[in-house]
Amino acid sequence: MPHRPLQTYRGSCHCGAVSFRIQTEFPELTTCDCSICRRRNALMVKVHESAFELLSGQEQLVEYQFHTRTAHHYFCATCGIYPFHRKRVTPDFYGINVFCLEDFDPTGIPVRATVGAGMA
Image (cartoon, rainbow, N blue to C red; front, top):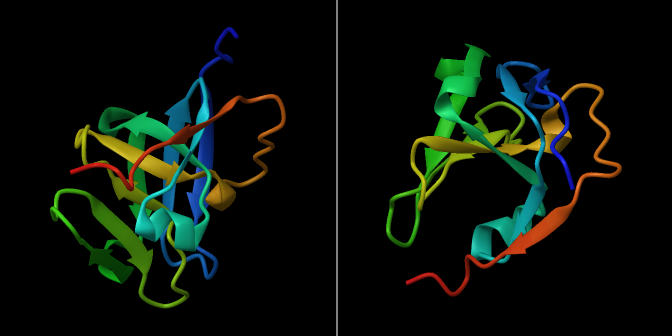
């Protein structure tokens, strides 16, 4: 399936304290079966750090790490929403929770299940 054109989206946590902007072609969306992703049930798009801009809320972000402590999972300290994380295998990329994007419709974008639970 061909990529969509490059698109810019704004995103935020539920309370709006954390806001960000991304650019992506949405080649695919991913789910993950690791212990944290199963619990938060996020649908993600992978975005290079050069295509990510934190607009507000740096001081509201709480970081959570587990297992190898390589990935950096971020949550809003006020509302608890997970908007994004720095990826473990590709640390120069963010995994963006697409449910935090304004006016985003995932219809027609392929979804790939990734294996996180089996990573050593």
